[in-house]
Image (cartoon, rainbow, N blue to C red):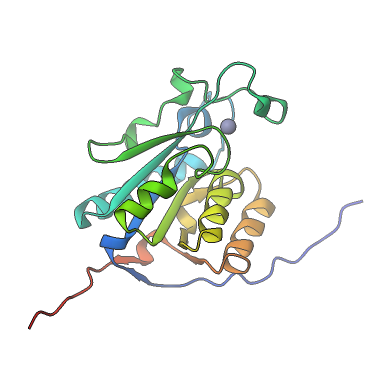
Length: 206
Ligand code: ZN
């Protein structure tokens, strides 16, 4: 028996002004296995987010803001392969970040073993050293690695911003549920990539 559920209104913040000095862009798992044709765990909608994420990268680089890529990383026999097909095997083509979003010198790439980019990585340490307080999180999968990273960030009292046109999921229900939880449980903001304005805080000197 199927059941119809109404999707509640998910608040959209049209414009989010952020200080690039205290904001980082986190690009989650935009690797061939998730994004490209032939990938072992391809998210069909992920390819459409590539140009949107490329635009975010341009803007964040131009503003001098920190950029973190996460790279899902597994080895043979990983327990996660009881849940998902084998994917993101370290050193394989599928594990590589897609060419169009290739990290540049100065960006940070963190190999992560689980959904949550804080788990088993120095992400929290780096953000504290950088004095970053706000994370703009994009990539895939919206309700899995993006969501668990956003939740883990919010539990540490980082501000979370999700540009909804820069995330993708396998299932529209899961995507809506994730964004709903972001705005409700996590007190995060859902916006669009175009809605993110990187505006240096003006300091006045005497
Ligand atoms: Zn994985």
